[in-house]
View (cartoon, rainbow, N blue to C red):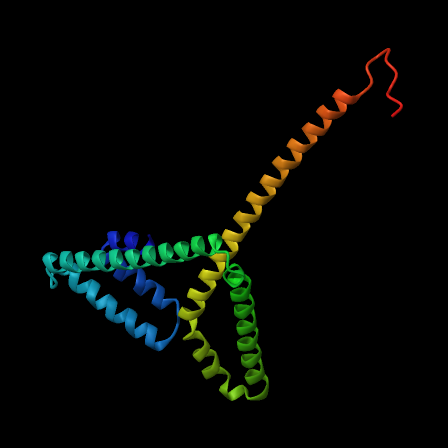
Length: 195
């Protein structure tokens, strides 16, 4: 959704937004990239880059945003399909997939953070490169944590559904008990059975 909105803004607006964001990084490389984007913006404004070329770049950006959105939609569809298959499965391991995946993610996260903390404490000179290397794992963590988030969300839905069903069952049972007690209660002027 966000790529589609950005694509609709158009290349000139994206250039300004990205250049302004890069300036906030306060780093020579980012400043150089912001300067280069500023030159592109100046060329567009001065008419050195034709409106037709800008329109073509906008169409390309929109197409790339559409491809990214389709890819995201396909990923979510596949995750949901696997969750539905898991729910109806009679195999005990398949039903335990969510907790297993959660525990593996937690252990992996703890191991990674422990290793980073160890390097920072024992060899501070390498801390920067280790942290930069960890940042390159962002995509893997994004996918894994997204799947885990969907698992947790779906399990919460299941628990709410079970709680609602159990509440309805309890309410129905209470009603039956009250009816049964009302039918078996002694009527006024009548002695209870001695049996």
